[in-house]
Length: 474
Image (tube, rainbow, N blue to C red):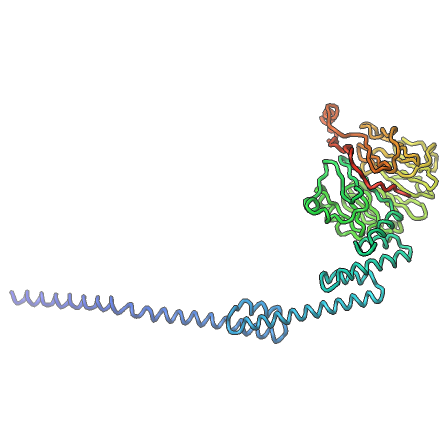
C-alpha cells in the first residue's frame, strides 16, 4: 500500500516538474521570436517607402527630360533631401526663371515694335501687361500720351481725353485731358437722387449727404477713386474713360459698370462710349426701356433716359412714349424724365413733350415764352424739371408738393440737378443752394403713415460745400 502511494506521488511530482519546465520555456523563449517579426515588418515598410521615393525621383527626372520644369520642381521640392533632390529643384527653378525672363524680354520687344509702328494704344496695353518689368510702366504712360496727341490731331476729342487721362501724371497729360473733357462733354459736377445729393469738389473729392456712404476701400484710400470728372446718380466718370459706383448702395451696379471702357458721358445708369454707342446697366433697365435695337443707338453725342442725341441735332427715342421729337432740329442738350422730354436748342429756346401738359408748347413741341436757356436738368423717377437761364435764374415745372420747384429767388446759377423730391443749384462761385424735401417733421411723418416714401434725410444740407464750378456748355 505504501509502495503504491510513493509511486503516485512520484508521478505527480514528475508531471509538476514537466509543467513548470514548459512554463519556464514559454516564459523565456517566446519573447525572443517577437523582435524578429518586428524587424521583418520594419524592413518591409522601409522597402515600400524607399520604393515610392525612388519612383517619385524617377518621375522628377522624366519631367526634367521632357522640360516640364514646373512639374519637376514640385516633385523635387516635395522630396526634400532625398538623394540630390535639392540640387535638381534648384536646377528646375533656374530653368523656370530663364524662361520667364525670356518671355518678358520678348513681350517687351513686341511692345516696342507696336510703339515704333505708332500703334500707341496697343503698345500701351502691352507695356501695362508687363507691370513692373524694366521701365514698362513709364513706357505705357508715354504711349498713352502719344495716343492722346494722335487722337487730338485727328479731331477725336473723346478718344484723346481718355488717352490723356490714362497717361495720368505724365508731362501735362492730366491738364490736357481735363481741357478736352470741358470742350467735349457736359461735365456734371452735381447730381441728385431719391434721397441724396452728391457733388464733385474742386480738389476731386466727393461731397455727399448722409444717406450715401463711400465703400471702405475708398474711405481708407481716397486715391483709389482716381480722377473723377463727372457725377450722375450713383455713378462717377473718371478721366480715363472708366466708371465706378463708389457707394455701399447698389453693389450689383458697381460690378456691372466696372467693366465699362472708353466712356465719355454717364446718365441714369447708362454710359455713352467714345464711338457713339451706348452701354446700359440692369439698374437703368428698372426705370427705362431696355435697348432692344442696338443698331439704332449709334453715332450719339449725348444720352438721357430713353433718349439719345445725334451730332446733327436730331433726337432718338426708344420705348414709343413721345411723338413730336422726330420734328425737332438744332438740339444741343436733352433731359428725359418720368413722362416728359425737354430739349435745348442752339438758340436758347426749348422743345418739350410733357404727358401731363404742364408746359405750353406748339404743335412741334416748341415751348412758348421761354428763351435764353443755357442748361437743363431732370432725373430718374422725377416728376419735375428745371432749366437755367443765361441771367443765372432758374425756372422749374411739374410736381411741387415738397417745394422742389421753389427756385424763383435763386440767382447766379450756372447748373442745376433735379432729384426726385428736391432740386440743387450750383452758383458761379462754387457754392450750392437747394430746395425741397429735407428733414422729417410731423407733416412728413403723417404722410409716411399712408405709404409715402421716406425721403427726408438731409438731402438739401449743402451749406458750406464748395464745388468745381464747371458750367455745362451745350
